Length: 107
Image: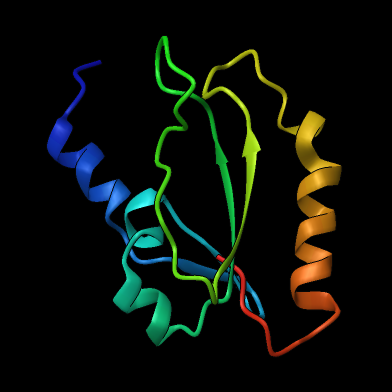
């Protein structure tokens, strides 16, 4: 299989999908678009990311304005990593973010 960087780049730039009321799924590029986040009235972000290679710096880390609460769940982007190991932490953040206050929006 030939890796097409143009296709890959377009996947990262796609618009977010509203998967439940007030809950959006996105890649890192839309999640860093402050204009888009403001238009969607996003006030919570759940970021699942790992560290940069040979570094303690998070991949796709971004400085959000103080009105946006961000939760980072550290996990490597590798086949061996089990998303289920982080599911409870993610669900708890989602629940506390939007279930307890239906006007909140999470990205």
